[in-house]
Amino acid sequence: MRAIGGLWRWRGNPLCRTSDLAEAWLALTALLLIVFVAPLAGVLVGGAAQSALQRSVREQHEARHRVTATVVRALERSPLTVDPEGAPGEELRSRVLADWTGPDGSRHEGPVLVGIDRPASGDRFAMWTDARGREVARPLDSATAATHAVLAGAGTAVAAAALVEAARRIVVWRMVRRRYARLEREWERAGPDWGRTGAGS
Image (cartoon, rainbow, N blue to C red; front, top):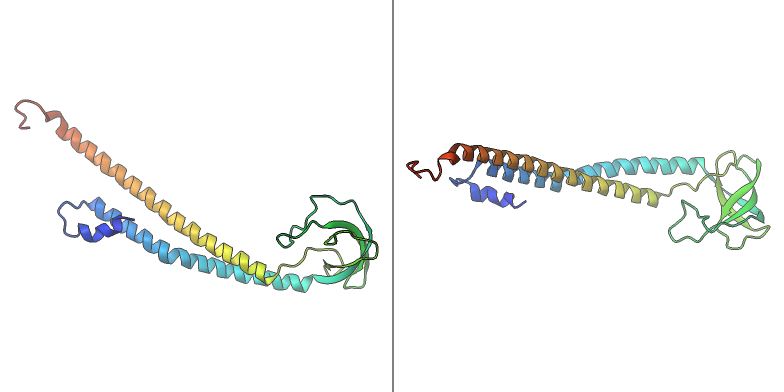
């Protein structure tokens, strides 16, 4: 990005090459894209993600129902048994055989995970089911959805900025290669006469 400062320095300078100005303008364009366009892309993607995730939150809360289940008996506990959608730092969960009544009045019984350290027969706990009483994962909450949307927006902004910078570097690399190729051709034309007697050097 040092070439940006060179725009003013090269102005009217007889030593300025066209490629110098091109590099400086390219750097300035890349900086403007990184400062203005990348954040805008992040905001747009984050806003779209927020709308989609909040719609999903509403749909999940409409389709999933919180019911109260009763522990029939504890099942064998695995040290790796965790709730994949649980809060960070949540303790290991216990596996139990439980029965519950679905929102439609149907009776159900099956193995479920509960956040009870030492579950005993008769213990009651809350769980989530669909309209027919089948166990489902806890619905996504608004705060988690908002966090995911912010991360999506920030990731998009960073990716856009990285893409612009990568494109700038590739273009500069190609310009430098062209410049060296031109210089090499000039040396080949001038080089054979250098140092020869009577060649005027």
